[in-house]
Length: 144
Image (cartoon, rainbow, N blue to C red; front, side, top):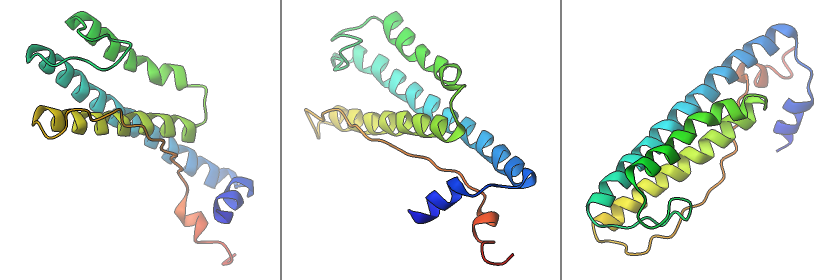
């Protein structure tokens, strides 16, 4: 924990700051990609389960949403990068990773219901805090 606070308080040279920013920028876009892939898996599963007679537990969608409603609900995920754009990169990554993990857990829970292993899986909830750092800088401490 002390290391995290030290990293946040330690001023960086412009060269190191540039390297860190480049890595963080790429990392939060990878988080968005993972989030959108997981949301699409959940969307496809929701559409398939509707055809098989299962019902939806999401209160926003309702018990038996139309295909259009399901697609619009998941299309809203495409707006998340634009909504998060003014936030710091670590916040963007954390939110996208949290959504992705929740979606992935929901897809696994849906699979269990489909296979008859679990009739009431509940709604998985988690929080992910993603931190990116320049590990060359971290391990260079004390060697200056």
